[in-house]
Amino acid sequence: MIGIDFGTHGSGISWCTYGGRNDDPGERRINFFNTWAGQPVASVKNLSALLVDAQGEVLGWGYDARRRALANTHGADEPRYFNGFKMGLMEQAVAERAGLGRENEVIEEAAGDDEEDDEDEDEDQGDKATPENVAEGTGEEEGAQDEATSDLVVLSGSRRQNAESLISAYLRNLYETALAQVTASGYDRDDIRWCLTVPAIWTDEQKQVMRDIAGRAGFPMEDGRLILALEPEAAAHYALVSGVKVAGGASDGASLMEPGCRFIVVDCGGGTVDLTAYETDAEGRMVEIGLPIGGPHGAEEINRAFRDEHLLDRFGKLEILQDLAADHPEALLDLTEAFERAKLHFGPGETDPIYLTLPTAIDRRIGATVRKRLARKQNGVTDAIVVTADEARSLFDNVVPDILDLIDEQLKEVQNTATAGSREPVVLLVGGFSASPLLQHAVKEHLKGRANVLVPPDPGAAVLYGAAHYAYEPHTRARRSRLTYGTCYCPEFEEGVDPEEYRFTLSTGEAHCKARFSKLVTRGDLVNTDQEAHLAYVPLEGTTRKLTFSLFSSTEPDPRYVTDPGCAYLGKITVDLKKVMAFALQDRGVTLYMRFGETEIKARAVVRESGEEAATSLRFQTNY
Image 1 (cartoon, one colour):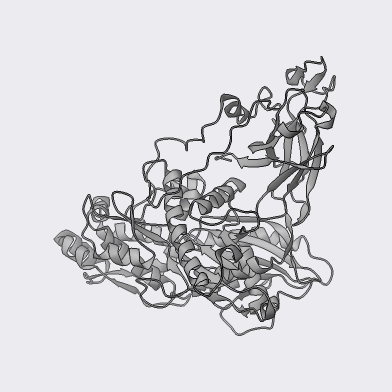
Image 2: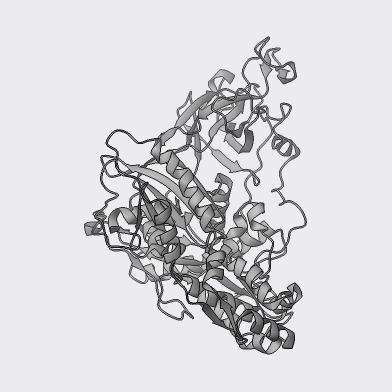
């Protein structure tokens, strides 16, 4: 069992063998990799970074990429250093965040919207979800094209495409490192189950894209060989078996394993903050009691504020920072990472300033005017960037209030499930940013009298260790459906009820309705992980060789039409009927089964007459 925690700032590998004493979660031995090339000290996390030359060849990854980048002289043909590229899979509003620090900006500006995969004209029209084009498809389905794998990073596409190329290259290095470590111990690659973590707030399309990227990076694609785990959920698996402690204090003996314990997992990472809420059932398994929420409020947002606001204040002109980013990106990177290390030790009662020595390249570049400005603003200090205690707290204010608001929102969901005798809920802080004393103090003070604030041992590694536990034995029993899901179907037209513009006529003369919403699950429903929602469908025309279902979501509980307010087109489900074309039309009906309780939505279809499964594919559209 191998867990891969791919994070915005750092990533790691954990694994364990199956069977024996490891069947007991409390006794399970989790191994990890901590000998990364170029690392300054031993760590279970490597930097999520790449050094790429002009031809797209990866020259280094992780700490080694950073070491080489700092040693390089900058020039037009010099290798480029990339980090933070995981955020490129987030929605455009997040991925296209403006600001300075372009030496760390991974993905180049796109000249418009992301390009969709090429599909036929009818399918493109179906994406628009109007009554005229959401009816059943009858054309031939194009076979999925296998994407060619390459060791080269291609950076000539959109912002999103560039991110995917960088992620694939980085995951390939993680995969090969983990595989070499485990196979060296005598295990075969076919004996390995992999678990890859993803943010809880990612859409189903983003999770599907991550699975596709992992396949291009070398991970197995067979069902069950690669599973995705939500990052806070993986951290909760670790916390369940590792023990917890009160934030900033000694252990109070609280246990998440006790039946009835209700807890919120707050995963504070480099790029995002994700929150999920659970209740422990009588068997010690987790039942989700709140919908996942979150946002781009991770530690990198503080670094961005340091670059864009604090350094601008010290240097005085935007042009100076832009010139440094263009001519000495490695020096600006070094300065930002020095602040990154310092801020994790900054406590709530801190009064001493943070001193960041100017890198040599920057120290030589700034002129007399900037020196005078530094001296005036920093009490005579000109060879360092000084961040006073009040200024540091102000930088933290870029994210801490947002994190507290998210916790309040999720806590309301948890309090709504309270019954007589319910204990005070628990807020579990995990993720690298959760190690911040200031953040721990802020959360604890904010929730005083409302919830216990707990931190597992080594919160920055909680997701990493939890990924191996999740691969071994998922402890999640049920999840909340975040939306109402259903398909577009075409029942008989109801006179006086359905709008006339939705009417269409079959070759048999029967009138049907184009845009009805066939509900599979309702927003907020508690769905067991092994539960399948199902509905029966029959082709409308005898020439139909495939059934193409348009998958829709809604924020409302009972939409009648897929065009109702709150409805959104998500993608398509295709069922191949070629093998049953010899059957009578009424015998070609299929039962569509869908799982909404797992990390990923899954679909399968069974021909009712024969009982055999039909080839079924589910693809989500890019921008939902």
